[in-house]
Length: 293
Image (cartoon, rainbow, N blue to C red; front, top):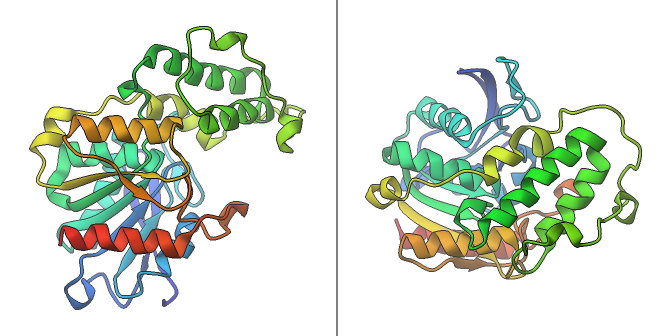
């Protein structure tokens, strides 16, 4: 695949940078442009997955406050609606009509917010493991856990908060009301820093955590959308928070989640030191998109 061409776009409260891979923004051989988004993951995380779609124009971007996309409004938190508006502006700047959109994790939450408002821009959405805690049974405990992650970050810094985050996201099954009685993981157990460096600008723990997990999807708008909406989860993620949310969302829109290879980051091919099954993942994604051509 050709080297990506980077573009800058001023949006409300941010300057967004996005990358276009392929000969042009025009759909290749009748294929729709494929947009890949995550949050707070940057465009770098889609390098492996993009390499399996050389027959398409592929677009990736850095969400506001991440990587090359800087906030210009001075805000310390971002909402799914703000991210959705950024993605809307990127798609409109492409000028190619409805796109296919693969969105992972927080990016999937933001994509649901986009489709609820602008379904005309997205032909097919594959929403992979959106951590929408609001849809979970027993959501009060899960929301309290997420609030505690943010509070831990503000109080103690990245190491202790990230140790809790890893434990929360890898947990199989729901949280109980007595979750505070459970052992607190040590950052040292995960090779994380034990000293607080004083920074509070982490895009996951500071900027997006509360607003992403606390987002309540607009099911009426999603039900009326022209977009083909596909919820997805990794085969190794069964029982985990984001996979359970995907299943609940799928049930609410009258479908079942499509099971993808590997785990929450199954599309990764070594990016950020994480290994999924990107070739197999891309194969399933291609089949899903072809189903809704």
